[in-house]
Image (tube, rainbow, N blue to C red; front, side, top):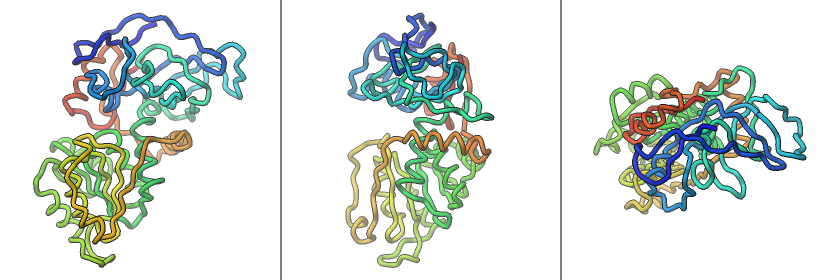
Length: 336
């Protein structure tokens, strides 16, 4: 079968389309014919070898994928699944790890996964939309709904909002009925953020972030729950944004994080945490129930995944290069 491969760590020049044996599904597994797959922020890091994880080489990128069941392993109790069923893959395989990280990824014609990693795609949801959801949108759903528990009358600041997690955070907060302030790195991306529902957009690299957010949401006041400030900050950036985020949270506001793309050990200001009684919330990954919920929301027309581009798998270098250059808004997809 055809698959995207890299034999050693480096830049996009290491990526190539090669031939590898089609995987044979074991008992309890399904062989899935991949129709669409999506890149995530970890893919360039895996390619470059900067994560510290031991990557089995040759490696295939992409954790997100959708397709059709081709076959089952011998003796498998299919449990209601049938050949040709349309499925999304939950990318975390128990005992193997994450597709595209410790397990060979989904940028290939076929992939073999346990039946419990299959999520049925409802009628009306395309393979491309399904493949855009698992890692980024699944992470955002858990962060916004389950962990931060954003409410309709709240104001939410989403930092670095132009990737998959950020776009979905904006969209979900607007679906809930919150007011959204979102940051992005270019005028083009800021306009796209408005298009998907952001009420206010701000340049992410501005040294005046605290002043600009306070100009919109007001200044937080000590022991004053009804004073200004945002109710929730969505911050998976870390770095220099961490201390600034504390300064725009209202009294008893909360900050939720699922990563630290700009640095995991930033300077902070603990005074704000105790004196404004702030809550810092961690959120890690997604749930299979959440993935099914996302598909239903898309099927109902309540969520339109932000897709940057859809390319044939032969254009993997171009797609990965755009991601490395931070020139992607939403999700970048490949089709087979």
